[in-house]
Image: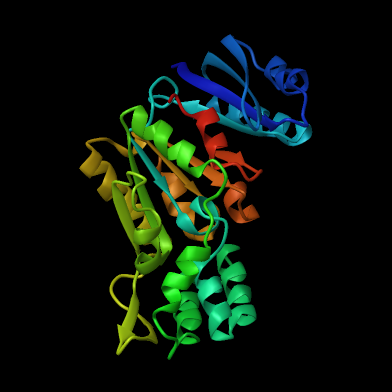
Length: 290
């Protein structure tokens, strides 16, 4: 049976709109083609009823790769309705850096920890084991450093615009992070975030012990929390959008109705439904009916 889908190509200002639209010529049965300028570039989209989604995805991905643009085939219900839940990773997604790397820099173990973080995000290391190894290097660090780190963090360009657009369209926004609650919660206060889940440092006598407490937020946990937040939002996984950048996000991206790899490691970019390869988080809006 034919399925209604929305095919979207996104590009930065350096890629001409007419060039991006050429990818649409490889597909038949499309209608309502739209070319729209944005603050970061432009969007080309069209609606179609297609029988072979596998072939369509392959054609769209191939065309996007050749043209150097980002793309997605958005299925129903997200093809015609805004998401009821947006779930995002935090480190290197909502914000521009990795919190644990920033903390480790102040503990004098920055280079060692950054290397482990990079390998974990590429999928080369087990996340839980790598987290324990990184946190262990922070033992004895004064917990007040966490406030210092938080004040140094920057949101990814367009992050607040993305959150506002989803909220204005009636959706909820959740954060599920391999980072740390002690930094994330005060950082996003006032943004209207509905759900926050992250790891927690163990602190004793005002100092980090080098251990975490509670559940480790690995890739399986991220998927579970997406489903939990979808239930709280009164929707199914098919009505959700997830955004992340690394191997730790793969289960969440795969469970969501649309999984978007943002400035991602290859392991995530090749497996996600959609990509945004340039640093504008609000470019995710190109794929949303919001």
